[in-house]
Structure formats: C-alpha cells, structure tokens
Length: 454
Image (cartoon, rainbow, N blue to C red; front, side, top):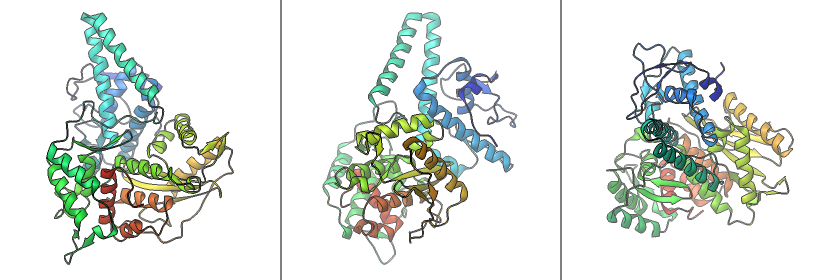
C-alpha cells in the first residue's frame, strides 16, 4: 500500500467545511483524504485535515515542509494500518489533534517531540490565519506582523545550521523560572560525584543508594509540574517531563510517577547522543569509534534524503570526520523509531561495508523489515560517499535483551554507549545488570549535562 504523501497532493485535494475543535483556530475544514475519519458520522477535526486545508490555499515555508510531510505520512500509515486490521483511529491527542488506534499509543505520544512539532505547526497556521483576518480591517498592521514572523523564522533557520531538520520541542513561551528549593537540589545533585557504589538493591529488590535519595528529592519537588527546565544540552531542554519519562519505568515505590509514561521519547535518546558525541570529541581516537547520529536523521531521511544528507555532511565537516570529500568516520550508529512504537539501532561499519540492526527484543535476529530500513540508508550512503555496497551482518555477540513493552529506548541508549566506549566500562557493566539502574544513570547524566565516569 502506497503511504507516500506530498504537499502538491494536499493542495489538489478538495475540502468540505467543518467547525474546528482546536481553540481559536478558524477557517479550516475537513479534508477528504485517505487518512481522515470518513467512516464516522460526526466530522472530526484532526491535524491532517487542518494542515490539508491550509496547504490547499497557502504555501508553507520551505524548511517546514519535511516536518509536515513526516507527520502527515505517519498519520496516513497509522490509518492504513488500522484499516488493514479492521480497526479505527479514534484516540485523538487534544494537544496536537493527531489520532491513534489505542490509548497506550496515545499515552506514549503525548509530550513527545512529534506532539510538540505538530502543536507548533498548528500554532503557526493559527497565527497566519489571524494575520489574514486582521488584514481585512488593518492591512498594514497585519502585513507587518506576518512579515516579522516569516523574517524571524528565516533568521532562526539561517543561524541554526547545525540542526536544519529540527523544530524545537520547547513550548513557545519561555519556561518558568525554577523555584529556589528545586534549583538548590539540582545544584547539589550536579556536584555529587557518581560512583559504581551509589546504586544497590535492598532485600526487597528495591533500588537504593545515595543517588536514589537525591533523585527522589528532586522528583518530589517536580511532581507538580513538567515545565521547569532542569538542564540544557545544546539545543535540547531537559525538563521535568523528561525526568519523569525516565524515572517512571522504575518501581513506583521509589518514584511518584506512573509507568504508563515509561516508553522513551526521542528527547532523552537525542540528548544522550549529544553527550556521547561531546565525550568522543575529547578522545584522540574519535574517528576509530562508533559515532551516534540523532534520531532525526532517519525520520528526515525517509521524507527528504537531500536535506538529511546536507545536515549530515555539515556535521561531518564540523567535527572533522570529513576531509576533502573523504569520509574519515569508520563506524556510526543510527537510532530508528519504527512507526512511533519501537526503537532499534543500526550499527554501520564503513570500513567493512557491513551493517547490523539491533532490535532490543532480539539483537541477533531482527525482523526483515528492520533490516530493509537499514539497507535503504546504507545504499544511500554508498551513493553519497562512493562506498561499496553494504551487506547485512548478523550480530552474534551476547547482548542484554528487552523483556517488556516499554524499555526499547533504554536498550538503544545502552547499545550506543556499548559501541562508542569500551564494552568493559564499569558503568555499562553496572547498567547491564538492571534496566532500572540504567534509567537512573541516564537521568543522572542528563541532569549533570555530561557522561561523568565514562
């Protein structure tokens, strides 16, 4: 089934009017596309229908197009998947209006970067529509507002060459100031030295130690709101919701968070990628080590290969992995989100022209469709850098495996650390013995803003 989508197709699609459920968003209707709720008697306004109607009469900024297309393609895939199984996408996110089949999928989505992107796109559309409304009465003021918005967006895009594919997941408004009690706890935690002895299990099997005590104090202060920014890692903000995302996978007797939010979003994975990359820059043999890419590379690659590789080459030059067209990078790691419900890792060896796909459920025996995803990327790399054709290599070494439904992202982070640093690192050994310990260590590194001890 063809799941591709283009803005040209959207602009050529006729629409019928309906009342918007999105606050203050007027003048939009329901688009007659294959992923809308045609089967429901009551018209439902979704992210897809709002964007479709907007694109019918307007043109999005060029840098927004790949993000919009990626979100629309995901929505169409979800709808096709549901139709093939006789199901429906009735679970709608009230924040961004994207739709899902199951409440669990919706719970995983809420608060993710995908949710934040969609919300920002809807707010952009809302702003443009308000400007057009004002133009009817005060043309000059409206035009100035619209021009200022486009100018600000273009300036931001030009100055952020390091991440041309990214739309900030932060809220449009500045986050509230961290209250003094919480700020003092964070500063105390950041000065607290990590050690292998800071975590252990008691006789009841509960995780204990000085590190747990300090994190519990922070979590108790954080449980009331998720808006405070606890740490900045380059362009990513580690908010209290990210901390909750990580610690909710641990026994509720330790941390006051619900396990329903334990599936990792891309924010902690991409933040760890930034910390790993920063640590590698300090090492003299960085080109000999496995370098992780952001998860945004693959999601952008499937939408627009040219944009993805332009960003990738910029990063190679910036960190001296590319010299006079020659690729100095020997191995890189590619985190992949498959359908917004499972994380896997591609391990691509440029020297041997091989790649492995590590599925946390079965690292040595990944499904064929996961292998095909890796092959697609590797074939593109062969063309871009004039490399021999890559072949799949089964990973036969002993690796920890996922035994539940929500820790795939944690395993992908563990795999990235394993390949980028020495496998016998004391913290990797500590983490491999317990997924709860790994979540605590990831939380600690993100709050500290560095891979202390690695």
